[in-house]
Image (tube, rainbow, N blue to C red; front, side, top):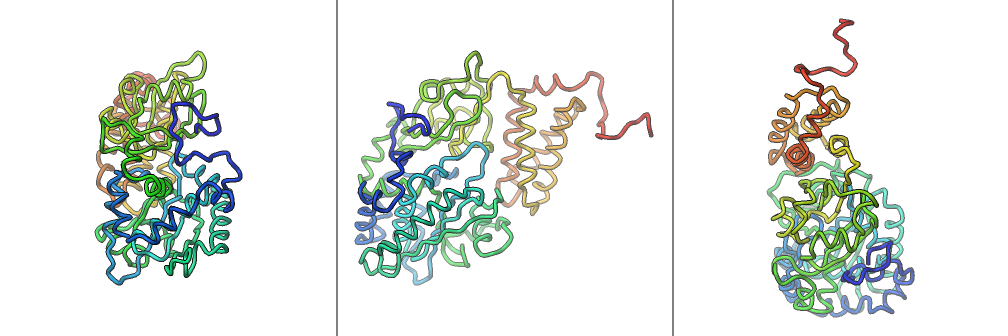
Length: 441
């Protein structure tokens, strides 16, 4: 449903079916809706068979990378080592707030998904890592875990299966970088949340140097529906035009749009119809100027580029951007794109862990130059310098935070260069230092 708006008839609510339903938050309410029956069946099933159903469904990671979930689970073998499952609820990307609603309204859906995923990867312990600012979701998930232990759903003999399944909730300290999988593991271990160099990959040496699988909140929540209804059912929810993007996807929509909220639609949904029919289009009297379709770290699209695009991994890539986390940010024609892009760069400069010099220096310099242009003190040379800095930031650091800053800057300059140039005074050829007056020197 387009929570907090009434469900639109063209939505396909699977994960979001019980958003706004307070009874579904409780164990009794979740069980009344069939909750934990899939877990009971999964615990009686060989982990390889669980992996295969998810693999056949085509479910891909909903955190942004889009890696096939069943394939990721199949990396984990019964090798006698201690395995861990970590679930990424550190949702900090500007424009993305879908996992928050899953945890707020259906915490048992997440706990059940976590227990199923842990069983599928031969793990006895799962950690749910939640963004520190998400105080209500943390409370809801902790209460759900507590209820599940009290009912014997979790613990040493989960649902009488003879198998141990423990789920722990970890509150993050509010650092965006801890949403990166290896930084998240460092944070869980009590270390500074810096990303690790890969390889080794988490499936080989992850949390506490043991084989580890990391999944997103939405991903494990979807997995239980795949097991309940089957791989073919899940694939039937999406457009057959692109068999690589299956099932449904939750999209967070914000910015200059009539009905912001969370919408769940089948993969392959037409973007134009999504923005206009479901989300109500731009505010009255305005036109869309730009759309960021997958969280703030992906290329910006123009309305013309959205015209024939479909909302799945390949469809948005063909339009010139990425599906990412599914955070859709809308800008109407009243917005100053230089100011908006400078705000994004400021966010990434603030959140850089400063481990890589290209990111530490690049995000800071990008922000300073953008803010100089925004304030009418830029030069035409600054535009070339921004592109040169972006080139040195992309693909050259341990994680992709540096790329995330550079991407909207490059696409913004490409598509809205006239707005940048309009802020640059004519005949300005040298770099002005804020606060420095040549006359006073």
